[in-house]
Length: 399
Image 1 (cartoon, rainbow, N blue to C red):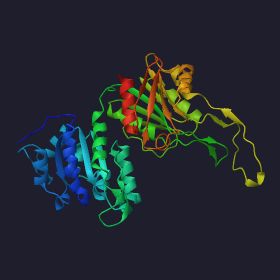
Image 2 (cartoon, helix red, strand yellow; image 1 turned 90 degrees about the horizontal axis):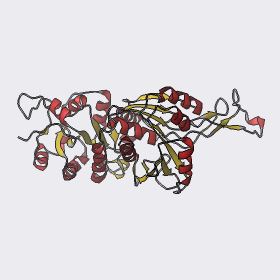
Image 3 (cartoon, rainbow, N blue to C red; image 1 turned 90 degrees about the vertical axis):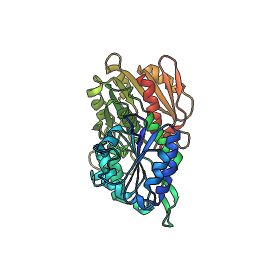
Image 4 (tube, one colour; image 1 turned 135 degrees about the horizontal axis):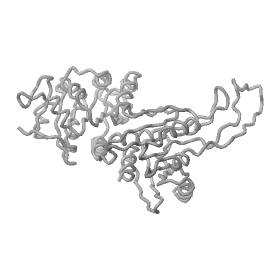
């Protein structure tokens, strides 16, 4: 019987009891075509749709189902599989399994492997659209994402019950593509301390209103997850954002630009790499009203004053040898404004993204970065998921 040793391209593929389970066979083969060694663990419900024999024939590896199975006598399979895997991929993932994973339940082989596993995890849900939209399921997914799991959102379309909506298992190509991105992360930041600013800031007008911007915090979240994958000690100073931040990072929550500056300055001296991904409000109301401005006041005028330049202040305060990198959201592809910012703020590099292009930038799941360095070099990421962009950027900066 073939047995594997620890390797980054070892994938444990967990298959749950969904009609989409048959597509896991194609996924296993696609991962193998990409150079992975794949072992499959079926839930008992999954065995109603697919068989152990199918996956053992496809992969040439043992397939587990029961919690007490031991392909090699005398060895605890759930421990061996958990320690030897570079990725735990669950596809399709049902609502039941997702909820059990979030709650830390370990009552079958798959959840027992997951409970012993400390590496990279990827979850591809498949279920009825109403189930996928339920608050309990969304909360469970958010919990798993906060622990560092990557979620491959299901596609829109017809599902097995005849209904239509978001719940159809993502394509094999998409799942395998995300898996390849996750597996590609090096350990270039091992032992390094990374400080990231993320999300928007809110500048109060009165007690109930504020000035802000369209930042979702998704890029900062992706950078934090990528840095953790690459072995860094990560701190995130984040404005108000719904983007899940990984539980493995130190999270400092702030509201205003001045609070963000204070929170980041208190930690910058320890950082080897500082990334200013936050979309900071450039101006704030000079004199916020106490209480609520009433409509009866008629026309009002707001006097705005400049906020502190956070990334410039961090570049000035950073320790010798630290790399300080800014982000520049520009309304077009011309990077000249970013080059001016790079020189003015004293940065190691600046990552430029064109927020006028459809499907990238603010609140999108994809991005396209141009890294402009102080030494005159320039690199382009191409259009990728924000996680892939984050890994690309950190590979350049950590090298």
